[in-house]
Length: 177
Image 1 (cartoon, helix red, strand yellow):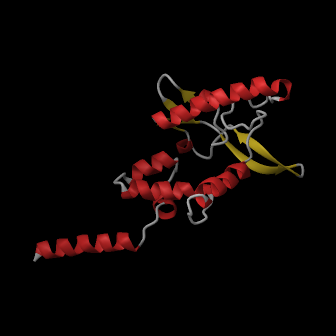
Image 2 (cartoon, one colour):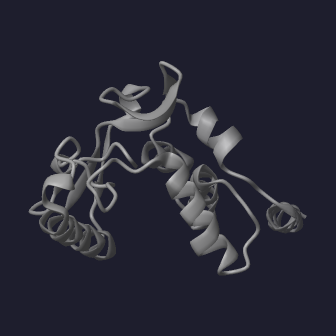
Image 3 (tube, one colour):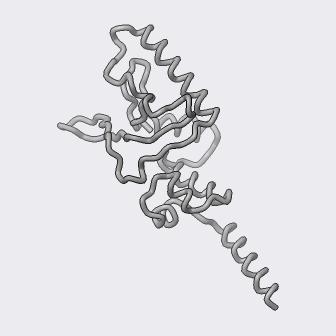
């Protein structure tokens, strides 16, 4: 998410293309955000349709960045002007800031159990599967190169799913009798 640049957004075609990533790394004894122009695998590069909600949020962010640039003038960083996720001074946001805000503003406010921000990918995969999306489509959506990664690591089934499967198996057995 932090590696997203404005060039990855096509407002005319209403698409968002994942082309880069950003990680928090220790370089020369100092923790910094490193933008990686290459993703892990070929399947990591993917294009999504822009939903109206995401498009509106991106337009609001563009306006916020313009206002902050005018407000802070020479103090506003030009180094990351092409990035979407920058702070008030135009500096690239740190991954832990995103995680902390997610915990404080979403989880705690709504009384939800603590999970890591990255765990939302697991939640997304499971909800998509529950909604009838195929594993192959979820694999593509998450950018996994192997279907087994999506199936074995990212989708989670609980007792409710076991009960549903058992009920279907029972129905098949009854129909065969």
